[in-house]
Length: 149
Image (cartoon, rainbow, N blue to C red; front, side, top):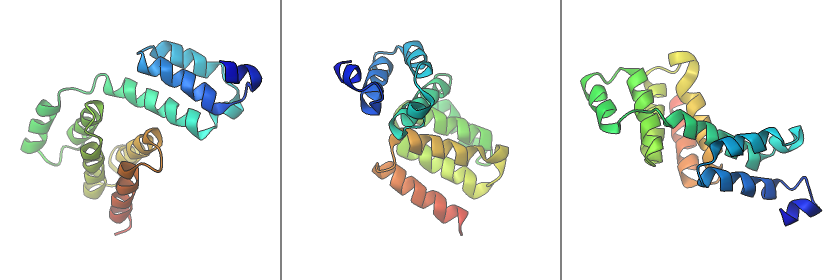
């Protein structure tokens, strides 16, 4: 808050406040805070990544049980919706690398499935994690290998 008193457009300070809300489970507060930001700040990469992380957190809230979804896939590996839900559930429990692999597998099996939902979900995950994170770098490499093979 002291930084913002001196520089109201400081994206890092705003991001810190929003992250504080997210960490303490105050998602509504985080959303309200985001709604009060200028258009310029909302375009900032830090702020945008936090927005995406909030969206993913909300999306994963009803993801389902990992083991249950895994069993569905074992019985029908071509059930892309089950694989997508499995990836979301894996992300929710912190198994991000496996979630990325499952989304890449959907692209490998059917690039166009559900209007390109797997690729779009991967971009959300990469954005939320940050572009310099090893999971993002490796995930982008795997996705590119599938898309351009």
